[in-house]
Image (tube, rainbow, N blue to C red; front, side, top):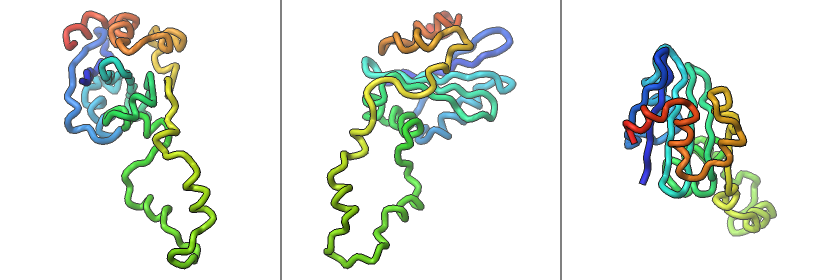
Length: 177
């Protein structure tokens, strides 16, 4: 089960809202969702948590590229929303058909004749095994907001209440939890 919330910084403090991720298929979709919640292009944090497995934070400020942190990349990569974040962080595959051109064998080998590169590829581990267990992404994502890298890395899977508390947003976060 997922929990997702937006935390938007305003002049009066933080405003929280729960959010539906049903229409989110890409990082761009998630970023657009965050920008819609932004007041005057202020900081917006998107929290995504999969119960007892992993949590992720996406920080969006104005038109800048989003900053991302995932607590456990291997666990997140096995879930739909986590896969969006880990693919961005680890350079995973996106579903761009133009990328298929890179996989075509245009070296002139005959059908049925093995290519030396194919033999080497068969020995390498599948891409899913290359996802590291543990945290990935911007470990300083919340440092300027009051939560150091060390504190962020020490959090467990039920981290969002602790993060909200460190940001001074525990009460508003609790209203959507």
